[in-house]
Length: 405
Ligand code: 7TS
Image 1 (cartoon, rainbow, N blue to C red):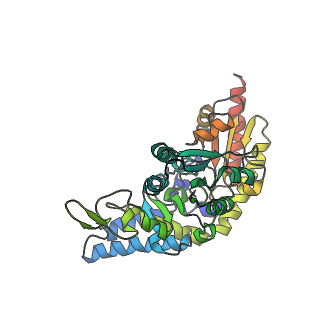
Image 2: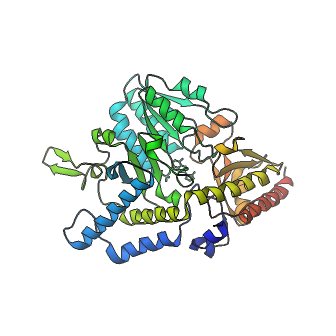
Image 3: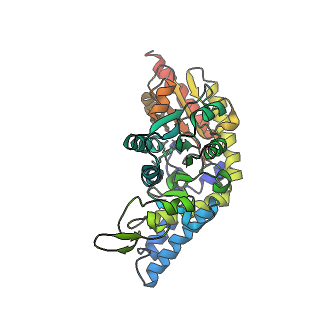
């Protein structure tokens, strides 16, 4: 299958002329997903887990069926290890508050990579500050990679939690997370893995990876906005206190005391985003239909082509690891001497959507000695023609800026 054929499944890509290179922020949605959400509201909308009437039972069944689908998709042992949230950020906060606050203490260490998105950094800062723990970072080398030496020097017997991003949303570096998880476990730490930028592109097998917690957002993998996922090992989730408290997460409520529902409901307080969950189910079906093999094949071809074509432009700096097998579908770049927001605006005027800024990774950019980049992020509906339009627009932008340099 070619990206040209795949594009036909995406209404927005048919309806708009722009070249969309911001899938790292959110992906476009295939018709199947859009229709699944519509079908839900048209034919079986009700609040799950609430009513004894058949419509509510049906909504509950559809909702729980997606939980089982997610479990199978990431090879979790048990469905109740899948918790639905609002987004990756909320999933990561759940872990920080419900696990971190109760298990990280004064004198302990929390170790993160410098590549973390703020979502897997700011909550841990709060935990470390509140509990009197030390927050440490694993820094990358000049090739934008975390070395084994760095991993082994930072994770110690004092480490209680390791937070690691699988694929950097700025650099596209694929981190050696198996090594990190393995080493952290040897030291007795739990690992919180952020697969937000990897699961859209590569198969995630939670049993093979063996991370204790895994977080991601549906909207970066074709699902609607507003639905996030947290996977946690059952034995750990069972021991944790709830994150949010209220309806649906309880067993019995007395005036002064409450007992909590078993997993997964303990972590799903209040009415959930059922439409989003149904859309997520359709997104998983779509990804499985296309197949990760096809997705990876298309992306490696198009992203390699983009890297090669952009490398020919001597007026831009690229922030990509030279080890191509460790690089996913994100290319950050700058036109030398021009602010990335100006570049992104000119690209937009030429019909190309890229993100510019610090990409919610300020400590990473500060470590790199820059304060922002432009970022082209690709998905399997992007074509080589999209890449050509990007490089043409970059050349045009440079010609324009050159006059003022
Ligand atoms: N983790 C990573 C690695 C991310 O890239 C993002 C979002 C998040 C967590 C948070 O996801 P959210 O759905 O909870 O917001 N990253 C980006 C991005 O790169 N551009 O826009 C959002």
